[in-house]
Image (cartoon, rainbow, N blue to C red; front, side):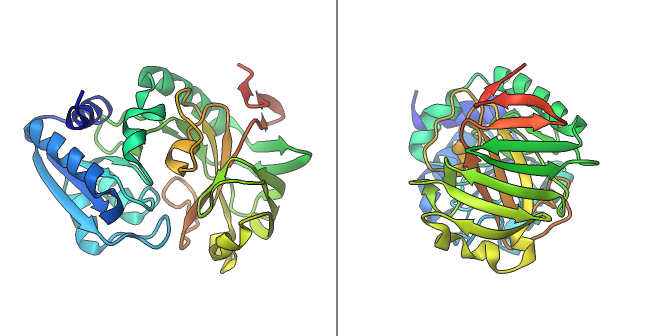
Length: 313
């Protein structure tokens, strides 16, 4: 299968692209080749394909230019192979509200297109993701334990979001590759310490664990190699806010240092700091930065859901 054929298969399977639909590809110079493959694939499917290239964003969650946001809102399908994530931007939110089906691909590489999480059985991923999402939505409190450290998060009143990898209905959106259920904890309801030992946005693969201390939902301290690369998180309270808890559900995902795939790794959890207004929270920050916890214990309302990275149900 050629890369264009593979791209067409992705558009068909994950986004249900139909002949004549307007398909917009948004990319930057780093992901130009992937963007071109998706554009060519959309043309091969008989779509009205458009291609917009922007300057690479400075941080994940930074808004795209207004002209791109407007084009996203006017399209049937939007695919975003970009270096920095557009997942938690107002541009993505408004485009989905307007009915666009959207796949964001922050940090995607050509290798990731044909290996790892993209090769998953997405019917299986969808089933597990929806189960995890229901458990998160029903819970009032989550607790993560790892390496002798404990972090508790209040989830009361918040609904989780499934990122299944299948976005075939109007207004559906999520990452590709995919496979996670995630939720916005209450912005002032997280306390304790968490050991991020997989990977971290802004750093990549963790050479050694990072220890985050959280009080009333805000980072008060970060320790570990590479922590100086995370200074943006300490610039203001919005950036320092613990904004997400996610659980990976894709058995084919491989820890590689690219958060797009890493946060989908089966049996991991991740927390993020910054913006969560795009998925049920109220915090709009200058960034959205995730960190992966390998082989955690995860409790929801005191019930063990993950034990050493293995689901208990």
